[in-house]
Image (cartoon, rainbow, N blue to C red; front, side):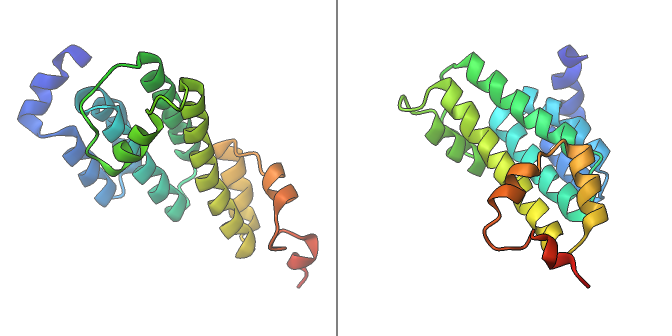
Length: 170
C-alpha cells in the first residue's frame, strides 16, 4: 500500500539504494518492481533515470522480457510528469537536468513527451542496429517481439548498409 511506503522505506533504506542493489545482483524483475516506488517517493526524474539504467542493463544482457514493460513505464511516466505540470525544485540527477531543459516554455507538454519518446526510440534503434550488425537475428527477433519495437523504419532508413539482405550472405 503506497500509504505505508514512507514508513516502510524509512526502515529498509531508500528505494533507489534497493533498486541499485537489485541491479547489481542482476535481479532485474525486482529492480523493475522498485521503479514505481522510486518515482513516487523520490520523484519522477529519479524514476526515469532508474528506468533508463535498467533498460540499458536488460538490453545489454539480452533480458528482453522487461524491455517492453520498461518502455511503457518510461512513456507513461513522462506523460504523467507532463500532465502534472507543476513547479518543482531544480532537478539534480543527470536525467532530471536533461528533462528540465525540456521544461522550458519553448516546449509544449506534447513536444516534451515527443522528445522523450524519440530518445527512447533512439536507444532501442541503436540496440537493434547492433544486433543486426553482429548478425544476431534470433536475438533481434526476440527483442522485436518482446519490446514491440517497430523495426521497419530502421530498416528503411539504414544508411550504413548494415541491414541489407546481402549483408547476411555466408
